[in-house]
Image 1 (cartoon, rainbow, N blue to C red):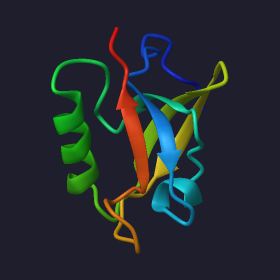
Image 2: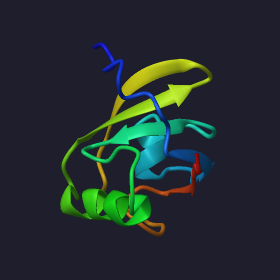
Image 3: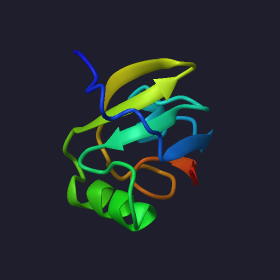
Length: 97
């Protein structure tokens, strides 16, 4: 699947990922730069929009575009409850441009 050439600016980077979390099980990795999460792309109120997107899609697959070491990848992550905190199990740092 091709990545939209216009959507290439990351808004967050995965800084920590919990073992056995939904994010780890679905293929996200430490250092991945999130370019798009569902309908969330670079812009205002990123954390609020990101959290809302994860919560409103609990139990449903969400398309994610990441930049992994210079390669853009299309992944699918399903936000869901697990033994740890949150619906995904990773910590991200917002990228400020």
